[in-house]
Image 1: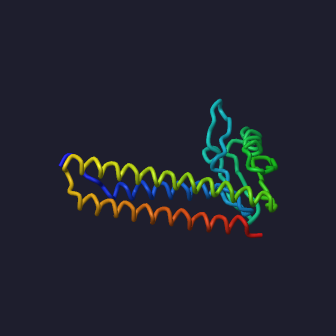
Image 2: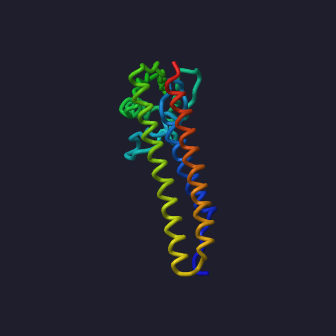
Image 3: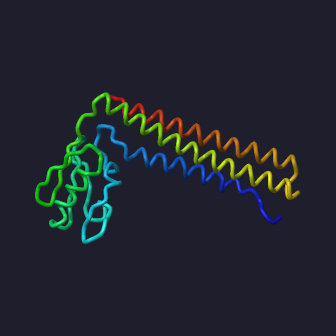
Length: 186
């Protein structure tokens, strides 16, 4: 057999789409402080853009406060500026080597906006899952056409790929419902 359908690979790739969605969700602000909120922030230091977590330590000392301990005091103003300009709606306060970031309450309009962003991320994950499904189904058609698998095997594998797709989409929907609930809590 020259080629064979690898259902474990299909499942791994679909799970990767779900995991990527959960990572995206971790960066969405929900009114509570989380270190993941600053994962996307890059700082211009030493003539290069560096992720915030490579030049500082981010911690959550209180439920509504993030603390960024900058390792090199000279980089603290750049860190403050990068957080302010990151589009996260945060207003950092510079205090020596420490940058304090209070997490403000979200208003209803902002919550609805964040829920839409979460829905967009979910749709992108569903599209990724459907693309993996399509690739698997195309391979099955090719293998059947080349007489490497029988029609019955094609049907059996197609059903399994569809089951994996349904389970992955269900996982995406559950993650979205959970994140929307978290965002909309007052």
